[in-house]
Image (tube, rainbow, N blue to C red; front, side, top):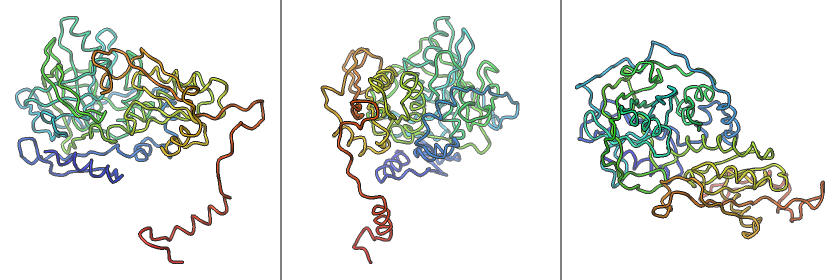
Length: 445
């Protein structure tokens, strides 16, 4: 039952992040599925960057921010691989999908890579977000749109009108599209155009079988599940292993009654390892683009942003090139306005923000806490953060300025000792020497 997720944990512990493809996964009832499963598809930052056509994952923040700021409208097609097979009504069977039960305490198999698409009934503008669904029976599953999400807002608007909410869930696509549809947008704002900007070409869409052009779906996805969220119907959902690395509590969640499933003839089921880098990497890279846009607007010296998987979705490292007085603090204050973040660390461009050892070095040697850190209270945050006090509606956040002090006058050196270093030619010779060393024994010279 937990074998595939256990394999991801075992690989992660060894620092290995290959794509995992299982040709004959076992269904929840013990049957062997004819549909294969792919997971760990986005566990590697380098691989995700390559899928976006970015040569170096370290430059993703600025590039992603630039692309989402230049949307490309989608194109509509009638030729859709995702509609090669159409299953309706009583023939629908969610339990035939090889959805995984991932963690101890999870009540059953969940869709973890389902992109839920709804629309604002007032404007017709779509929204897409990855949101979990617990498969309860052949035609019903819970659907948990995070309370602060745009999908939840759309759903509540339908309910306020006395209507059930239309929704589709699409699963599986090129990794660049998966990244594109995780762009962090305002409300209401279409993810289809934002995705086109990220992938650099129009996304191919097709009308959904149940809702027509009210809800479009990616024509080249693997699977689409179409249904409605009945008004004011809530059922128990969870516990569920969240991206925080903790098992979240049981909640009262809406449900989805499924009317139709469409898929490719050779469909592959995509799963995200919840709480693993497989799920964290794509969303964190999208967050980097958003935080970069927010902070760059107030701090021109900002050069890069990194949201490390080790910090879940709560930490961001901001890198600067010769920031002016107060500039790093301005940027961190702006960045912490982004709901998910609760810690921002500012460093100079001599610190590799993708190396935790370097960031810790800056914190250890460039920070006096009373002088270089500050907290902000009463800000919005993730209610999935397990450190949130019971009943709290807002969060406390922290910024740490680990940049070097400014020089006493323009052109003067900064009042700090130089970092220890060895001559570059000696370093090159040393690297050449150790290139042939057996790390399990002594070198042969």
